[in-house]
Length: 365
Ligand code: GDP
Image 1: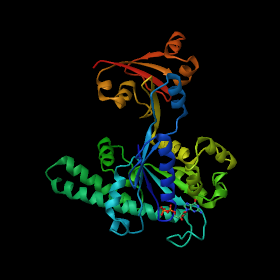
Image 2 (image 1 turned 30 degrees about the horizontal axis):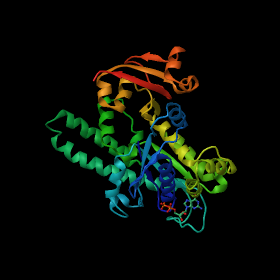
Image 3 (image 1 turned 90 degrees about the vertical axis):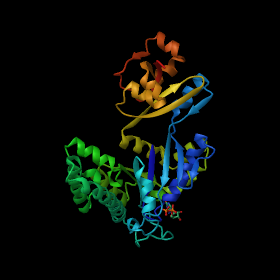
Image 4 (image 1 turned 135 degrees about the vertical axis):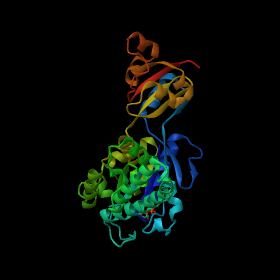
C-alpha cells in the first residue's frame, strides 16, 4: 500500500512524514527505510504477529508495510509549474490513497502561507491544484481519443466521457464524485489514475491541548470532519510535534507517554486504521518456524487470490486452505492441537478470507 502525503507548506507534513517513517523504521527493522528522502516504508504494528512468532519460535517476523511518499511543495499554482511544478505531481499518481495534512493549530511562530489558519480554505486550495493537474491528464487523453473518434466507436465513447468528467472537474468537484452506471466508463475513469479519484484521509494537525479529546473543541477540526463526511473521506486527529516525540521512544516508554497524554494510540496507528478502512483492506497471517508474516488483502478476497499474494504459483495451483483463527491457534498452542479440537477448517476456492485468519495453503506446483 502506498500513501501520498499532501498539504500546503508549513502545515506539518515533513514533521509527520519524518515521525511516521522513524517510528515505523525502528519496529520494522528496515536498515534503509528511507529509499529516497521523500519515500519511507513503515511497518504496520500488529501484536498478533509477535504472539504467533513467539509460539512458533519463527526465525523471522515480517509485518505488512505501508509506503509513504512526502509530496512536498504543493502550493497555489503548482499545476502551472510554480513550486516544484507538475513533475512531482506525477509522484502522487501511483499512490492508493492521499493523506491530506490540514493545519488546525495556532502558532504565531509558524507562518501560514495565506496569513491565518483556515482549514477549509486550505483544503480547497490543495483540491483545486489537484483538479487542475487532473484536467491536464484529461486534455492529453482527449487529444488522443479525439483524433480517432470519427473512425472508432470506442474512442468516440471515451471522448464523450472525457468531456463529462472535465465538466465535472470544472465545477470544482473531485473525479471521485463523478457518477455513472456504465461499467466501461467506470473502468476508463479508474484507468486515468486521476489524483482527485483517489480516496482521501485528512490528517487534522492540532495542538497538544486539542489532542486528548480528538479535537472536539477545535472549530477547524469540526469543519474538516463535516467536509470529509460529505465527501466520503476519513479524518484522524494528530499533533505532528507530539508524534515526533513518540517516534523517539521505545515501546514501553511509548505506552506510558500515550497514557500520560490520555491517548489510546499513536497517530501512526490512527492513520493505519483510517487507511485500511477507506481502502477496504484487512489482513491474514501465515506462521511457521521460518517466518510469521502479515498479508494485506481487500476485504472479500477469496482463498486462491489471497494465496496469490504470496506467490502467483500458489494461486494457479491452489487446492485448498487450512484456516484457523489466530486466537484459537494461540489458545491451543499448536496447529495440531487446534485440529484436534476441530478449530481448523479445510476451505476451498470459494472461501472468503477473514481478518486474523492464519492460513496454510495446499497447492500443486
Ligand atoms: P511542511 O512544510 O508542511 O512540511 O511543514 P513542517 O513539517 O516543516 O512544519 C512547519 C513548522 O510547523 C515547523 O516549524 C514545525 O515544527 C511546526 N509544526 C509542525 N507540526 C506542528 C504542530 O502540531 N504544532 C505546532 N505548534 N507546530 C507544528
